[in-house]
Image (cartoon, rainbow, N blue to C red):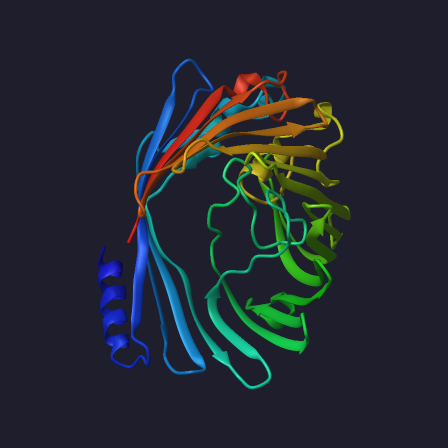
Amino acid sequence: MKRIIFLLMTALITNVFCEDGLNIFGYFETQMMGANPSRDYYTVHSNKLRIDISSHLSERVSFAANFDYINYFGKTSWNVLEFLPERITSVVSDSLRSFFELPFQDRNFLDNAYIKVSFPLFDLTVGKQQVSLGTGYVWNPTDVFNIKDVLDPTYEQPGHDAIRFDLPILDRMTLTGLVSPGDEWKNFDKMILLKSGIGHFDFSIVGIEKLWTFDDFIYFSQTVEKRKLIGGSFVGELLGMGVWGEFAKNYMEVSKDFYAAVLGFDYTFDFQLYIMVEFYRNTLGKASKDDYTLNDFMRYYLSQQKAVCRDQLYLMLNYPLTALLNVGTMSIVSITDKSIAIVPTFNYSLSDNLEIMGYFNVNTGEEGTVFSKEQGTGFLIRLRYYF
């Protein structure tokens, strides 16, 4: 709470020096999440306050920041091993099971804080900022900075400390460079991105060098290695449908090289039914459920890799039942092991500033698959007020 007060005091002081004044906005969010990997339903509850501030210090200089305060209550420690089959967890002795607890800990942190300066030839952004790459809805092979939750892919991503420049070259063509500081130059994250467009399509080419960490949860060791990525993406319209795709080849210093690709489309019918399909392949994932290991699942849960299985499919249907209520369903399919998570959803606007959303997920796969029935069912209900 002291940090929130400090942020607001800083914002008010800064307001004195702002050309157009200071904008303060944000939201309060309360949610409940549950799952039943055993006979009992576990639930964890959270409250989140997000404060956003932005201002134009001058015609060419702007500032923005976000601060999050989150507290948890209920079952605030979940053991990952309860969601995995005996074949996977048998390598863990009873004395080590406590090391696989994932805690939900209260947090208050500065999510973003950056200054953007517009020079005659380019824009420079310095500070903790959003770095989002790619055109995929659920999966982004070219984005090494973020990993989305497949059940909640539109939720905001964290900020990253970086220095970024954007240089317009031609109409619809921009060159972007980014570095994220490390302990020495060779360990800086580096990115170069070229964006352009032709007709109804936009496309990009990207090159990234980044340190990457893989933990071994069987031998409790860690590998830190250099990862180099070359990739690209496109998005546009074809025959009335939205289409997009991404591809990235990853050259690893120690681990095996791999590639990932996404291809998707969406369409809205005349009667307002919306449909989306997205296919994802990641050769870092395994080609058979018999090859899944504890490391695959743990690295996936801890966002060290984006997939356990090699091939997945995402399908979404959404329909505006009323002007205020949208209902739909998502299905996430592991093509590799033929397991499916079926996720009915709803979103209801209680007023202009207040909305409630939720989903209920049911897994249908055999034991040992990515979406196995042994993982149980789950749900999430979220109420959000914007101010």
